[in-house]
Length: 278
Ligand SMILES: [Zn+2]
Image (tube, rainbow, N blue to C red; front, side, top):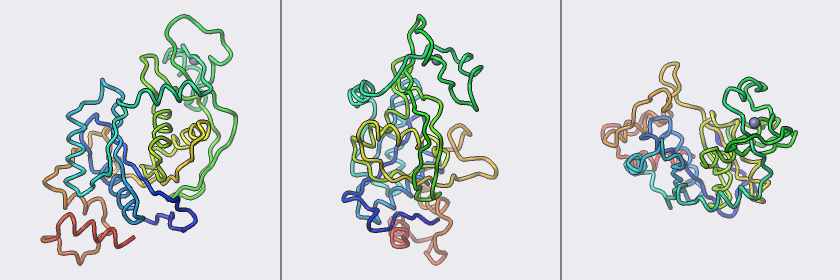
């Protein structure tokens, strides 16, 4: 895999990467692979690497999963320079939410689906008088095409669409809002994540710009597959075992040279080898 952020002029003064798991379950091989790529790139650039636990949805997330995730990462040698929990940062999200152009949406799920345009919300409540009931709050997106240079996929463009929810009816802040706020507040310079999140990068970059932040560099990594199935929590990918750390690293990086003494190498050996590979 070629990661093309190596031009000196493209590197900001402080490199800070992050990995942002949702503690709705332990890590599987796909998420480990993303964490590893992000950690490696930070090490290769003398940067920092932070973990951000995406634990806003208390119905899905559990503290025991957060603890297990941190143990899993440590067992694979992926030590962080710091850990933050989104559940402790609500004041930041609210302050940003107040500054953004939003409107209330009282559409039911059925109404959103019935009027959706290519699967995206139609903007129905922008024009309509507000109806009774607790609303969700949506971001009013401009009719604009945006783009960026992806570190893996190259030039990417998309027309902004769909007016995403920034605050749900139950008061939980939306994924795009919290990601954008955290990239700014944590001074994140590089975002590595799975290519299934490519679409969300356009609106998150737009939000960062609206909030006056510096947009990080993004790279969307290929997903790992088990046969034809994407390795993901939705597909019930199995949790990685800390006791199999070395084998897990080999599975994440089939490009590792065969001359590493597999039976004897340690996790540290493998990570050193990967750091040196660039
Ligand atoms: Zn609506």
